Every structure is written in structure tokens, then in C-alpha cells.
Image (tube, rainbow, N blue to C red; front, side, top):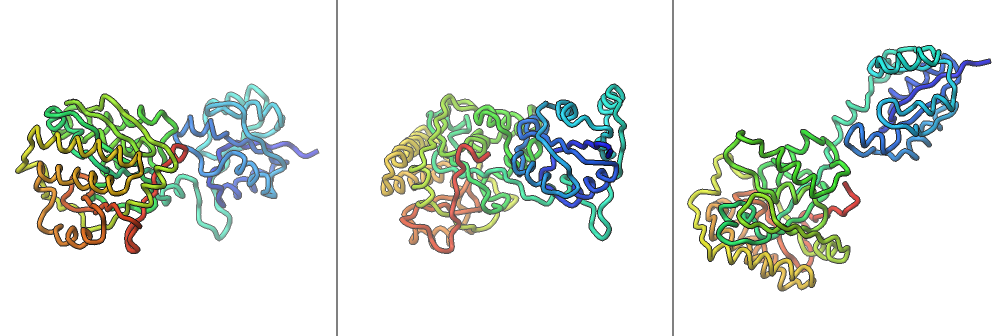
Length: 384
């Protein structure tokens, strides 16, 4: 009678290294596989799987070296205990990087032989691991596009007059350029915590976590505005109200599909050039109470226009918000950017520069997207 052999793992992004491991393990007997559940992987690795547990179970069962497989019902690093009780293996096989004292103690207590294998690729194939494959995968972290009220998230602005900032979270349909007003610095900070996907946390709590992480106490003089972390982490269209403090006192989210689709059909973007290293947008400023009031009113009108899907009012308030920003921060528009603005002003209903300006992307309100422009895709609630 053939011995029973058991292995356990995630087996997400199934690759030739997994198959080679199954093949070698099956030489010791009939091979049974325990697969980590989506919930367990999320808890352990703070990321969602590429393939769902049902897909992974289907693929693993289809491999000819596998006798049977199941989804582990436990949790944590030892989530396979109930699967072992189900299959009753004689042998437990692990890779060298999967060997732990807990597994050694577990096998000793159960009278199960523990075999440790080196990672060896099939002859003629390159070594493969999920970690190395993930290193080649582009991050699926969102970007942020600000629509109106930019600068109101800085206390030195909102202390003169409170107001809203409007942002949309964008799916990474393209790799937006660095230093181009798409909140890439905040996105890069997030990568240190969550390299590929946002975790399944409460979006507002996640935004606050990112804001605190990026703005390490005593590490820098300039504090990155909260609109960056909110715009990335909170799905849909979001407006956040600032009253002289770094974090907003109110946050409102719109996830109405008809409104988000309407926005996607009336906003497009074109790239200009990366903001130059010596750009200093926050010098030569003209920040007044009246100027901030104009910015605040434009953002409020912009939100109402979007809620009513009124294209003319949206374009007017979008442009007014940008003009209010430039009036307070003239360095947002260096001479180098003016030919781009002149070109696209005639092809759009309204336009603004992304982020704090100085370069990057021009975001336009249009009747229909320009052929050469970048179409935006707003992130919905369940696309983390």
C-alpha cells in the first residue's frame, strides 16, 4: 500500500517551481495538498491573492502528480492541521524555506515523517518562486487625481477659510510618471507597507495610517497633504473638508455608478513633462482670505455640478478652482508649461495641472475624450 504524502502552501501564481516540488514530493507516495485560504493569506501577507482559493484548488487538483487537494480550514502558519487530520499522511514534505520548529514539533507529536526538499527546478527550466515572479509584477496600487480645492489640505491655507478638496482614486491602467502631480511620492510610501495591493482595511482608516506613515514625526519640515493618502486609499469620488488642521473634519464619498461613469466620460489627461527638481511652487505666493474663499466656493460648486451631472457647471467650477490655485501660487505655471496649456485650452471645456503644478499632466474636462489623451478609470469600492 502506497504511503500518503502531504504538502501545504498558498500556490498563488502557480508556476513551474510548484509543479517540480509536487513531482518530487509524489515520489514518496500519493500526494495530498493543503491550500491556504484567501482569508488566511490576506491575514498573513496583507494582500489579496491573484487567484481565488477555488481557482487555486482547481489548478492544483489538475496537476497529475497530485492525488487530491483541499482548502485548509485553519488560520495562521499552521492552518493545515484539520487537513492533516483529514488525509492522515505518513509523510509531511516541506521546502527548506518552509521548515519551522512548529512543523517539526507537530510531525513529531503525530508520528509523521518530515522530509525537507531543496528548491530544484525541472531540468532545462529556470528556478521559479512566487516572490521572484511578484518582483516582476507591476504594482496595482491606485493613483490620485485632484479635481478641485488643491492646497486647501494645508493648514496655512485652510486656516484662512475652510473648504473641501475633491479627489478621485484611479486604477493603475497606465504607469503615471514620477514628479507629475499624481501623488506618486505617497504611492511610493505605500509600497513600503503594501507593495502590490491595498489591504482590505476600512479605507478611511487606511488613509490615516498612510498619512501618519508618510509624515514621520521630526523627519521633515514639509507635511504631505492628507488629500494624497485619501485620494489613493478611498475609492470613488471623495471630498474632504479642512478647517485649519492637517486631517479633514468631514469626509464624503460618492460611489454612484452613474456619476463615476459620467466623470470617466468627461475627464481625460495628457502628459507634458516631469516637474523639474528645482521647482518651488510654494514661494512667491499670494495667499489671502479672499483667495481661499474663491477656492473653497469653486470646490463646492464643482461637487454640486458633478452630483447633478451638469457638464457646463462642472467645467466652469473646475476652471475656477484651478485659477484660484494659480492666483495664490503663481509658480504653479512656469513659462515652459504655457504652450501646453494654450494648445489644450482650445480643445477642452476646462483644464488644470495635476497636483501642485509645475509640470506633469494636464487634466481636461471635455465633451468627449480626445483621441490622443489618457482615459481615466475610477476605482470602485471592491477593486482594492
